[in-house]
Image (tube, rainbow, N blue to C red; front, side, top):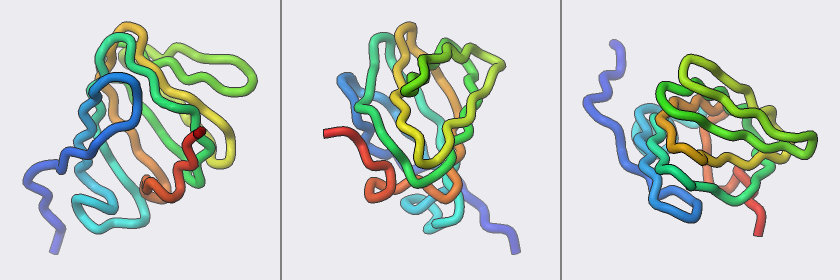
Amino acid sequence: MPTYIAHPKIIEAAGNKPKRIEEFVGRVNSSTPAVSVARMKSPPGWVEPGQTPEFDEYTVVLNGMLRVASRDGSVDVRAGEAVIAHKGEWVQYSTPEGAEYVAVCLPAFSPETVHRDE
């Protein structure tokens, strides 16, 4: 039988401004450690600490623009575009203009495996 998920759980976000994380599938909402699927709504000017996660993160931008910085530079990802952040590589996410996007983490996101900067 398929697992039906009626609504997401709201997760507290890191960063300098309030950001809404709606986890549909993952460790919190569905007890799924293999993958997480979440919709993010970030305000203009939001930035989070850098991180070196133990998971790959696949992101599709629905509206606005997501900036992904790495040690080699940064990329601006706009509505209709996607980006992959690879596990073990340092990245930092921000939304200079605000953005709504879907992030899929494999394996699922966890505070213990994201390894945010101090």
